[in-house]
Structures are given as structure tokens and as C-alpha cells.
Image (cartoon, rainbow over all chains, first blue to last red; front, top):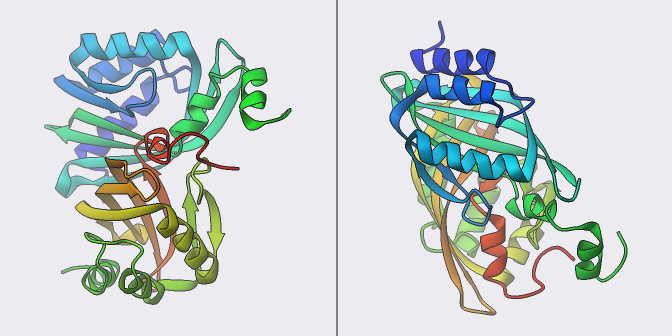
Amino acid sequence: MPPSRNMQTIDRLRNRSNFDDLTSDEAHAASLAEYTEDFVVVEPPSLPQRGEHHGREQWLAMHEIMRATWQQKLTVEHAWDVPEHDVVVLYSRMDWTAKETGRSAIWPTVQVFHFRDAKICRVEIFHQDTQVILDTLEPREAAATAAGGER
Amino acid sequence: MASANLQAYEQLMKAAEFEHDITSDRSRNAMWDAFTEDYEIVEPPSLPHGGVYKGREEWARMNAKMRSLWAQKVTPLHIWDLPEQDLIILYTDMEWTAHETGRTVRFPAVELLHFRDAKICRVEMFLQDTKVILDTLGPGAGRP
């Protein structure tokens, strides 16, 4: 069976984007070409880029926060197409390095993409563990003190 | 027609009481029957019950750990069945209340349910925000 129109959109995004630098200009342009004008991105509430971001301007502002905080890479491992619900679910491996502390973490993430007319209208991000991500922002000395010893 | 995996999941939903109590005896027994013997579950590492659990016995111990900390409810909002991948993706609404502090949090979650012969053989949990969940436990909570 040929890929659905939604999956073709995801394939195009994967081909044109730069997943070695998620917040690069190249990645921005590739994403915006596949998003509806009123798209919404939902980020976990504890992260610096938290909340619902509506439309291009809010999304770019959110990306600026992420770009200032981490170097971000993503490797897609699975893409699951649910065309009857206008959904594609990506299972990816994230690799982020905090610019302030130099600390890195790698973890799996699920991204739920909702579609309208084969354009992405809503993205929800489910990282495996936001605490692990937040830990990268803590200097090693502070983390060791909080844990009660050296790491 | 519903796939064999979806039928198994629907049977599990009827037998359990996830919308009232995920870790009750009734829910636990229903899950035990729905899982393969070598069932594996992956929980976020920072949570007190974080890690990879192999086999139903290990899972039952993890389940008891969760029960000691929270009252947990889950309502499936979307069930995405992918029989060719032997996978069901659940999009759920969770509500957890910490016994110690009385703090409650509601959040969306994605559960990846992998199947073998219409039994669940692996689950991977993606809760929207583990930091928010840990905050319900009060200071010093989380992995030792």
C-alpha cells in the first residue's frame, strides 16, 4: 500500500529538515512548509519551552528558547501512520546537550502529529522523562550536592 | 472488524477498572492475564518505579510500588490500532494523586502496547511530564 498523504508529508519533512540541528534555519523552513497557518505545538509544562504555542510567531519564539538552551539532535526510529484518524506517530531518539553546562542526555520521544488536508495542524511532544532533560541544565556540582555526593 | 490485538485490549478494558484504579487487584489480575509471561515494561527512569521490568513478577512488584505512592486513574481518549506492526498506541488522560501529600495531577500520556499472538508483550510509557508527577510527592522524591 502506498504511503498516505500524511506520511508523504512526514517523509518530505524528514528529507528536507536537518535533524542534526532541530532549531536551525533549515529545520525551521522545512517544518513551516508542512504546517497549517494555525498549527499548535504542545510542549511539556516543566521545560523552559513549555506550553501551547499557536502559529508561526509563537513557535519560532519557543524555538529561540530551545536553541538558547540546548544543541538538539533527533533520529527517527519508527513512523506509524494512522490515516483514518489523520495522525502519524513518530518514535525518535533525542540527543540534547545543554549549552550552559555541557551536559548531554539521550532518550526516546514520541511525537504525535495531527493532520488537516495533509498538513500538520497539531504536534504533541512526549519525552520519556522531562526530569532527565532538566537535569542537563544543572551544573554537575549542584547535581552532586543534591544527590548527596560526587557523581 | 477489530483486529485480534484490539479485541484483546477491549477485553482487558472490560475486565479491569482503569478509569477508577489502575493498580487495584481487579486491574492487576486483568493485566496479568493479558500479558505474555516474558512481558516487559519500560517506565521513565526518574520516577520511583522507573526502569525496565522483565516478566510478570517484576511488573507486579513495580505495580505495588506505584500503588504505595499514588492513586492512579487512566481514561483512554484515542486507541490507534496498527495490526501490521502488532502495535496499539494509546493516547490517554491520566490522573494521579499522591497518598503522602494529597497532591493531584492530570496529564496526557502515550502508551505503546506491543503484541505477540494477541497478548501484550511490551509496553513503553510516555507520560507528558515526569517533573510534574515527581512534584506531587514533595521534596526529595524520585530515584534514590
